[in-house]
Image (cartoon, rainbow, N blue to C red; front, top):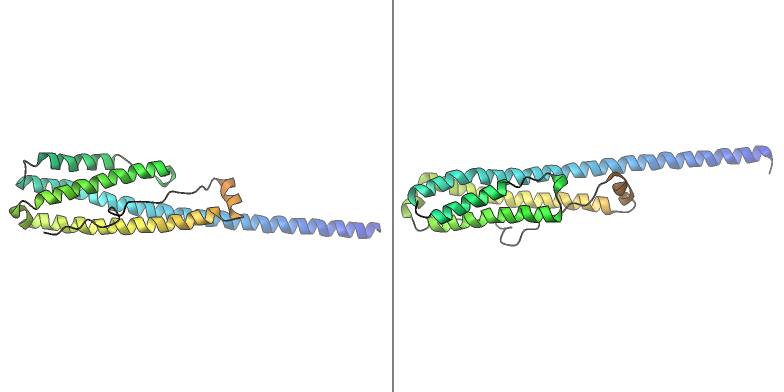
Length: 202
């Protein structure tokens, strides 16, 4: 092989290597940005879940006080709602703190609130004057609407998590995910009862 041919071949090899590096860097850049985008979608969906649970939590003091005005001796039920609310509001998770264990703890606390509210509404059934109270009826309607919003927010969160998890598990993108610390996120897996809105019928 002539020196000129050897130099030309060497030059083309370097050009090919440089092209591969540039294409690889561009692919890595796009893959990383896709992970950032889907991660932000999960963050936004989680914020919506928290907002709806907070909305429900904010309704509870007024609901308890209204029931207390008509059924003060139902102390155990009223205290159960207040305690469940306190437990649920004490668990504040960012998306980065979500693991299957912390998610299960969060869900358990929120299901405790839902259960306690269900018992409170059953108690209210025994008090015709309470059921006829306009403030109670409005709170009841707001609570039912909030439960529907919670169900929708959970579903949207799971959709966002699915898109994110699929993106970080696909090959060869999984290499970039591991390199930059993009791990899988847990789903919101409530039981069948929790997935349905709290129905209040008087």
